[in-house]
Length: 624
Image (cartoon, rainbow, N blue to C red; front, side):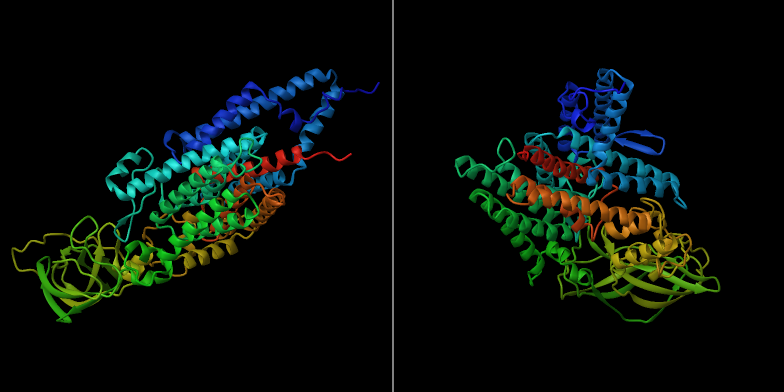
């Protein structure tokens, strides 16, 4: 006899897990805490090569609760089916329903490619697998959040939680920019402070200013829409006093985020934030008047800030100079004048050499403070074994601040090398804790020096630390440009075309692919450097398989977004679509998948986008 099931028992797992359970309520509460706490990540325990943070613990708890609740609910329904055949039907339908969703399929494929690429990594397999584990956690967070967000009120609550954490972190960053001493408040989250052209570069609780700016930029559309969302999240509030209060709050929060992005000195984020504000204005133009005012106000703020900062021809502000990327070469420029092209010194002795330095750049050179500009030098010589460089020279202070166009005469204190020989003395200015001028491409002033044997009884005051490199090769190893990194990514991809070098491995192997890598085999490379592009990083790390999976994921997200922003446009839906889009637009010039706050935010926003489409589809009247 054929096994049968009642209509209620034959519901698929995708329908069954939508029922409200106490475990779901707890998981949803933890999900809200995760959304609000994303900017405030603190490492808490190290398990072998893996460091677990507070945010990751919350993510894993949410995933674990959702999985446990789903399994228990499914087992209960199987037991109620009353027969083996009925259980088989239920299981088949439970697995088939989620699998028919194109977005779910794209996410699973993306995670699968990452895991396989990590397993096949030609080198650094353990770090690659570690990254794959974290990436899988982000994907599972998407599925958990999509399961838990079943109504427009849930979507709105999640948006509010994200906006709360964003507002607190951005406020802290602005306070830090005005009162740099308050940076100590964030030492539980990061121990490093950042500067740009001598000014503080605040990041609030985030590990890096670029990560902070990406986070604030992605949440800017939510700042415009959420304060005006109705309690059910489906419509904007009608024109009323409450609506206009919401519009004012939206503009204030948007201004706060735009200001924080500005002071983080992340130029790409400022441009993309302006584009996101424009997109919100276009998508909500047919909406309520308060919404149009809120979106338009954010657009005006972003445009004015970007315009004044990037296009101001005066360029009086160091921050404005930093933001105008097409004028990078004008930050640290100097012209040196020396009187004698050839000098003689005794080995190990201190000498004073007059040097006149002229400020031909766009910044004032401060002569005091933690980021003072000082005159220094490098020693370089060449023998049968090649070039040798002593990079760190004595510092000689400037007598006064030096504005652009002015010059000063400095008596440079020089310690001669401890071994006799013929040397090249290369004068260079340094902005302490920021940069050497030669690292920014400014030529040095060179003198030939014959170092003679020291007189009897003369004792060298400092023994040199020599590296086998020229000065040009040595400074190149510290700061490869973005185009150089992109070319390195292409070379790595050509060597491993299908699966790449392994996820998150670009930063470990890029030196071997640089076209002008230093000749010194012991040169130190910064392993924090990525390809500075989501797409070039994916190509190098995951190969053609990764690029194909990424494109399929983008298409699936775009189709989901299209369903959300098709008329009638809902402001929160439009905000979520624009917010997700910022990751892929900003991804042209940066990469954020390594950092928990940004990758988790991205997956949560995609889940909110999908959940909104789900609730809208369920709310639509069925056709007879």
